[in-house]
Amino acid sequence: MYILALNGSHNKDGNTAFLLNEVMKYLKEKGAECETVSVYDAIMDAKTPFCVSCQSPCMKACYKDSMLDELFDKVERADFALIGSPVYFGSMSAQLKAFFDKTRVPRANKSWLGKPVAALSVGASKYGGQERTIDHIHSACLVSGMTIFGNGSELGMGHFGVSAQKPADKDENAIVQCKSLANVIIKHLWNE
Ligand SMILES: Cc1cc2nc3c(=O)[nH]c(=O)nc-3n(C[C@H](O)[C@H](O)[C@H](O)COP(=O)(O)O)c2cc1C
Image 1 (cartoon, rainbow, N blue to C red):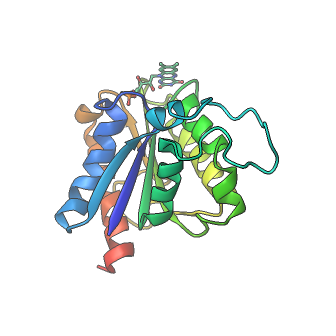
Image 2 (cartoon, protein in one colour):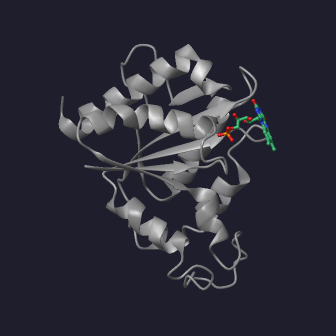
């Protein structure tokens, strides 16, 4: 199994990365190949990090053969995609939104249709917009027809994904949520 984690924070060892790793720790124990990719690095490798709608339909003019192009292929190859973002002004980070704005080609090709995905979010405030951020990530995923996973009936997990308060490694509830999300993914992928 190949699990791909998209880190929507530029911090490679920040709070979002901690939570993604916390979920993947259990998937690694199952023998899964787990990879984390920095969305920031990928969009900055394109000629312009933001979609400027230069062509319609998109012909990958700004990112052909870049890290972003590779990342889109990785999402297609993944058995499960985890998407994490810090809360920035009550929503996902601009870099993660820029990533989604670049996904017109995989969307048009239906490359990610039905792709299993789950989201997590971390903010500085306890109620700083984590669930709204997860909601916004879900909306962007739905535009490409991805299949969203929430907590199911797992106890102790946020209903829509993992919501955490910084510092995430001290948020005991969030750490339990990560384990619950891992269990949902294991149930889906390994049928256990
Ligand atoms: C531009 C900006 C906006 C932010 N907006 C919010 C916010 O609306 N709510 C919140 O709880 N935290 C907010 N934060 C705090 C971040 O969500 C928090 O520092 C997060 O843990 C960073 O994750 P990281 O360590 O993975 O980068 C904001 C931080 C920045 C830089």
